[in-house]
Image: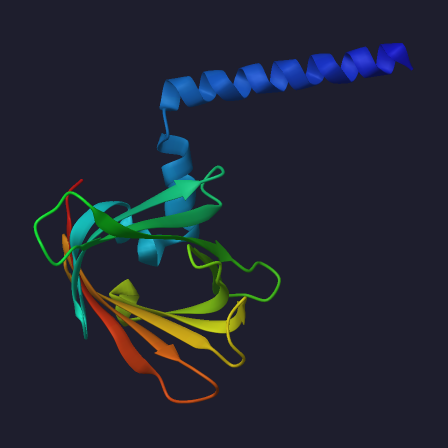
Length: 188
């Protein structure tokens, strides 16, 4: 038993060493290649984006980043929204969320889970249109929200370094209403 445990430990150490050496030689290149193969139509999003959102009650500043994680198996969006105060100040109200996009290998298609700072967790289907220039993330289930609450987030590519987005909400089985219109530009 001790010999088998020791042998298993040696295999793990060797495998980890090979993996870390491959990663050191290739950087994150292997992860990006694998992610691009799984999410090719969304690959244009990879990088960092900056812009603003327009609400009925004002504007905010937005920073988004998109990258592949866990060996390129997942596409992750991280969002930081900053809402300025009415008067000049260094204080901002902060909103954060992150979304994990994955390919449903059994059911087919793309799915997403979005985790919001307000503790909502949205399970969604992702539909790609116009060769990847438009995609819609529409919730199928929301945890910690009011009954029949739904979200829809539509992204439209405007050029190689620009996109717009529309975030919509629906409550209690009602129709979607626009909550925020976003305009973002690639910064990296």
